[in-house]
Image 1: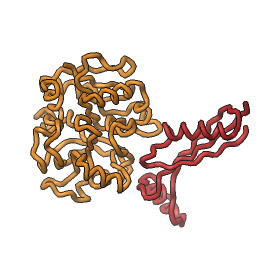
Image 2: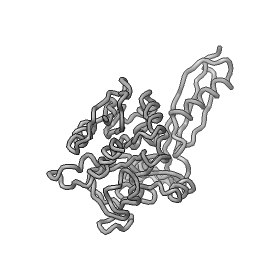
Image 3: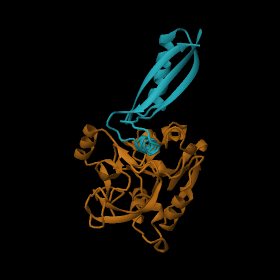
Image 4: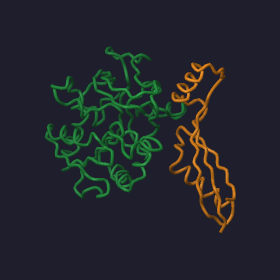
Amino acid sequence: MTVAVVRFGGSNCDRDAERALDRLGIDAEIVWHEDGLPADTTGIVVPGGFSYGDYLRAGAMAAHSPIMAAVREAAADGVPVLGICNGAQIGCESGLTPGAFTTNESARFQCEHVHLRVERADTPWTAAYEEGEVIELPIAHGEGRYELDDGRLTELEIEDRILFRYCDADGALTPEANPNGSKHNVAGVLGERETVAVLMPHPERATLSELGTTDGRGVLRAFAGAAES
Amino acid sequence: MTAYTATVTVRLKRGVLDPEAETTARALERLGFAIEALRSADRFEIDLEAADADEARERTEEMADRLLANPTIHEYDVEVAER
């Protein structure tokens, strides 16, 4: 059981993800995108960073790399896939998940801690939380504003595929608590299967108490659950 | 085969927020220019050879669909000219 952390040129949260998983007792290894997925891959993290220098659009280039075709196949087979930050942008660009993450409303890079409301607790990514629970994770992105046309977003909401929304400390979905202008405060969504998820905040940066919050552990523990079942 | 230049203009769909354009518009206003609105777009000029203009357009539209534009947020148009 090994979680493959896919490294592109410009990935910079790959080591954080590998170490965070390692600390949780989950075997993980960094995989260079040109080498393809190892045969024993039991989970996949597409980590944060600036793959291909964010040329064209964040995630656009990496989304068309051969390894992402393999990631999509694995996802269709039920292998858990988590896209974090740039990995979320790649996930949406590659069609793994619906919507797009684009320029923040502020037009600036934002690096801060945010509160998130857990919209569903019955997914592998959120089994550690209660529905409606407020957790705290860091964000660090310039293109994190979730966009999707109103009709499709309503469909997603009806399908219950919103995983996390930006909220205030009490769980209220206010405009002030929305750091980047995301539609309906969406911070993370599910793919067609519950085993595929993307989010802009960084759970892998919130696993050590020295760093202020350990709320990210629960998200990453999905990979332990997947390996056991 | 004929040499063409295909020009692809990719812009945000109406209704999709464009923070960079808004920031640019505000900067122009600070410089004293009176404007009503500003929209930004990306323009790609692609030199290619094709049997005719229709084929050049078809191939260019495929490039736009697959990479240059993101259909979730963008619309695009293609112009083809002999080079």
